[in-house]
Image (cartoon, rainbow, N blue to C red; front, side, top):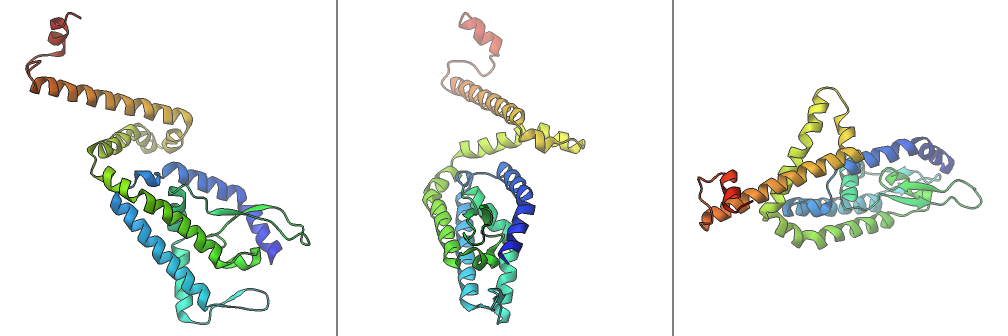
Length: 240
């Protein structure tokens, strides 16, 4: 059985790595979540943890170490865990926490050293000398990151600059979405080095324009310049 699953990991290793890289690129950091997104994520982790614990408490194993599901409840929980696979992986990756651990084959077996995705192989843990508590520990560590950031998420949620930054990020993505609409690889370009550079320049210009407009409005309010003044008039007035 160990050799069989090792074979699956070897065949899918490159595909799995590329999939994770692409998902990391398009996801936000947990430090960019609003407080309600943070709270929703913590609740999801609690539910996932409880279902995981319930499942492994109520299953049995046959002589080959394969899982026997004795009740309808455990079958339903397993289905729920499978359906939640992508969501739990995104929660981990958003927190900057890997879903993979290093698996060392037994010396007698002599197999390769491989990165093992704990959620992709959740129902095969026993074949890799792992126990459900290992996964629960990972869940608790990730929840700790969201808990620690909760206060900061409340502050940024009510910070206008936070939402302005999100708006600028959307605007900076428009050229790449336009490329997508033309059938060109806009998303690929957007996440490339040059694409990130272009987005940085666009975002910087948007912040610069916004700042200058805010300063202009402030000067009008305090009476330094008139609302009818143009930029050229102001430049001549200050002697530039």
